[in-house]
Image 1: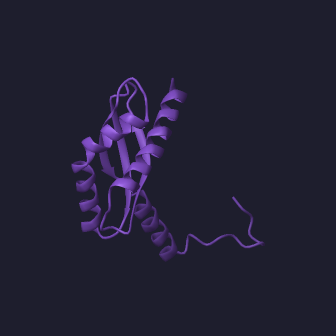
Image 2: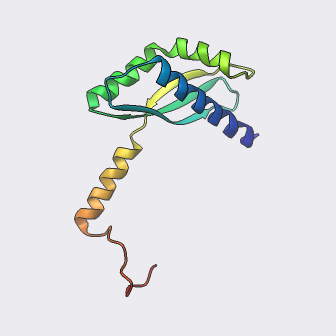
Length: 122
């Protein structure tokens, strides 16, 4: 069952990415579907969206996706044939920003330097 959910997640991610790219235009520089998590009953899909741009552009992109949710669900139901067409829930994915912040902190502390040839790798 878990393998089936993984396949459905990937199919929805691929089709939704294509729909968003084709149907919507954003102020932000780049809007991508990072991950899709569908519930086991296939009725809800949490779509994590990565947005490169200002905080205002990020919120505007998520708002625009919420406004287009029904249209995207309808188009997706025509492309992906499963028992239920899941209700889409868009969420801002800021893991890239958090990762950059952690790397920046490690660089400031001098802890993110690769080992030299003389130092053993742990």
